[in-house]
Length: 178
Image (tube, rainbow, N blue to C red; front, top):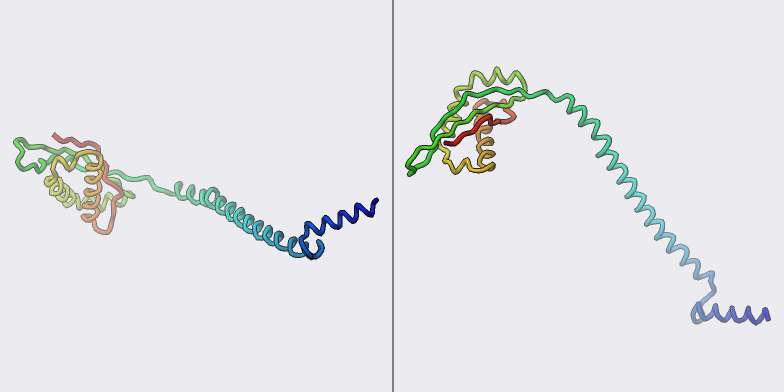
């Protein structure tokens, strides 16, 4: 009876292997090597991604943080210089009444040495402001975009007036359109 079961198992193995297919040893040569090669490639790719991600996160979150803190502590405080108050009439052809612009401006300088460079050319800066502001129309100052353009244009004109030196920003203390 044991022989009958063994014979039945042998005939079942032949049916599963296919017609005239060799035994399990020839099938195992290719079946073990091919999936294990795929597994090795996938594992190597996954390991590369993990190591790269860990290295990138270390660099962005830890290594760069120390440099930024050192630069932040080394930053100098800005120096502010008040400009004289400016009152100009705005360009508004065809209008029945004249509109005026009154602004108070503060210059943000990178260091104290710039104050000595700006004081001698202050008349030139005031002239550049006056000529530019008189050409503005009231519609040029509408909204935050208009004020941003005004700030950028005044910064550009000051930087052109003071030569190779540069200011950080023009800050508005007061703006009145009347």
